[in-house]
Length: 178
Image 1: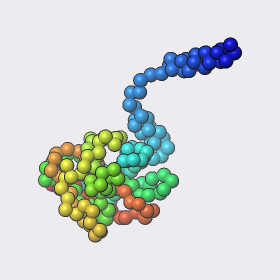
Image 2 (image 1 turned 30 degrees about the horizontal axis):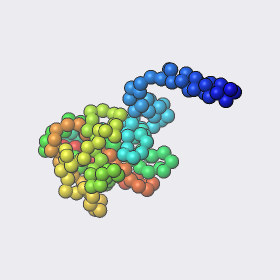
Image 3 (image 1 turned 45 degrees about the vertical axis):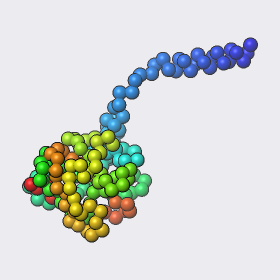
Image 4 (image 1 turned 90 degrees about the vertical axis):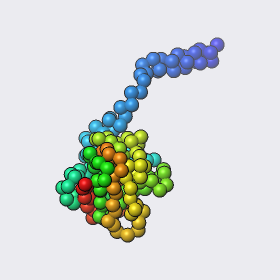
């Protein structure tokens, strides 16, 4: 009899714990953005493939504005340099040229550049496209120090992810032109 009462009590407690549950509304990325901003992280929350979302320093470029120096941030604990480069309103034929570092390969899709298609941050992993679906590049994956040229083939707004395994940043500039 005592054992039945204990089991009944456990079932009632478990049932009561689910009474106040609500449906997940998918605001996790926005909540992480707020936490990141409060903790001094970068100004763009990036959901990096296979990793936790982190605040990354965003480098904003202007079409025809000349070379812009990429602002690097660091991934916590491993101290690897990471940056995100914003390209808004790209038109077919526009070029993006990186001098120094190139776009990182998507760790979950071999041979694909990690490019997000979005108009603003935060950047969800679902916004990642194969960079070659919107841009052409004959220099992606080259071991030479650049320049790395990307030519737009599909109009839109994009974010290029730059990531270096190691602790040394590479002085990098980006030029966005038509």
